[in-house]
Length: 289
Image (cartoon, rainbow, N blue to C red; front, side):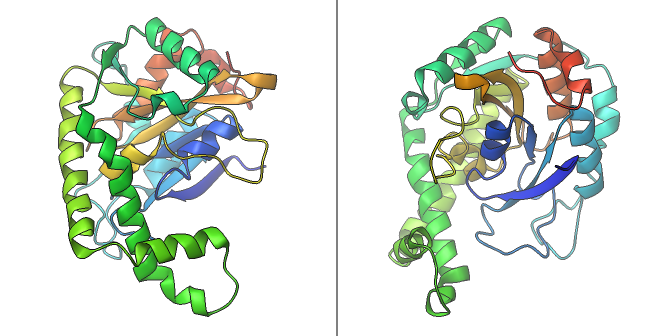
């Protein structure tokens, strides 16, 4: 219905719907796009992201939106590199990929796991297994998000009707202790530093965008495959190249190096070229495998 769209992600609200709708969705790194004027849920986790039909349009809208804004103290103090210029340049070497399943791998349905693994194989990706302590990252994200929601939005409980889910999360956040909250923020920084080591060997991480195709329910789906990347603030991009049951889209998520957001669309273009799909994404509706 629109060539471009803007959204926000605190857990998985850009990458996941982009996967379900079969479009490109970009969640840049934390601080790349200003959140000024948006409702604050969590300063530590909130990102502004975008939706587009082609990588050219991804780069176009990121060029417009990315950059420093004094109204958002977390925006980067330096000028963000040009996305369109980087996308147009040939990469110095073919992109290298790492398959990271995360501790949530078994939550993906069997079809999604098989298609992601097959794509990773075709890309020549090598496997990376995160250490066992990363499994606590989902609890850390939940503690930060719930506590910040309680702080920033809790007053709304007394102003009228709210959803049971919202009420439950605010009540949960009010129970998070200061020690738990500060420990979660510390762990987020530690996880980000650990994941950054992967980029010494790979240009991007390959992982699912969601557990499977869009659910046939009132739920908007489970953000579990986005959680770690929102917690660590790394750039992420949904690449709509796969399809599952009834030809519904399955998202492949690329996660990029911190501070190098401009490279991720170009890496995605390299992925499409490697898989022989680049020409499909010059059309209005992307084709899927």
